[in-house]
Length: 344
Image 1 (cartoon, rainbow, N blue to C red):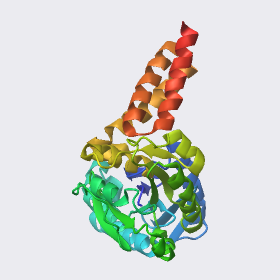
Image 2 (cartoon, helix red, strand yellow):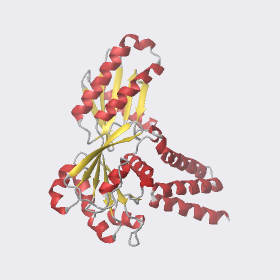
Image 3 (cartoon, rainbow, N blue to C red):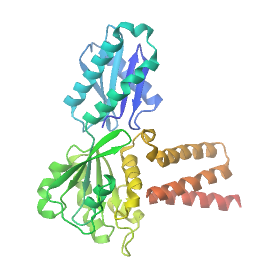
Image 4 (tube, helix red, strand yellow):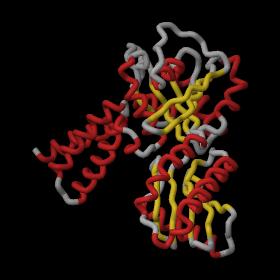
């Protein structure tokens, strides 16, 4: 997934576009010093690369104009495609602004937004749904893509790829066959995923059995974002999300996929797992509000204002509950209750 784009002139950022949360300003300054040192060692019009945790930084320069072009991507993205698109951006920029670069008004660079969005589409973001047969993978696929919700379970044979949009961004959603006779295909299907959603039916038997997929994710695509979707939470024998997280050892979200009204919630979960830029779509506003409130709560605690912190904790807990992040809901709910007792 193309996560961030930067164009710099003499070390100053003149254009940036964020699709996902990766680098803070401080992180970027540190990475830039590393890139600058590499460029000074002789990188001319070729490509250079470095990394930051789960992410790869690909860059190229124009030495004559002192320009630096940077893509921040996932480790699973195809490098040849990324380099081709980065070269396209560089070429388009030089054709458009090369002659006026010293007197360039940065606001003019907004004309590059459509090009960057088309590049994001070409560096295909792969989201894979895994899980055993009957847990609701196809229902969740249809839920995300606004398809018709199936009334009965029809086993998916081998796999299906759907295209989904979140705001202006395009993603490819892979739904695998969950029958065990197709298990020999699972490794190939999951390879190269940017995100993997492990779907369970929330029963103890299925969740324990699904630990197989947790290990498969670690083996085949260790740099992918991953989480469990605890489907069928409306059933009497459904385990709590906290218990499912304990068994699987990964983040889990609650879901009832047969309810069409949960489409927005499911898309918000996907965006949360991918750590998308929450300003890309108004649909992601609850995620933006949650992250903002967490920062405000942290500031209140640092300032010693416990009463204000409690108000933020309550609001964060409510947003987490709506999102299906039961574990984070419980964390902030418990904090709010603890501080309320202390204040009284």
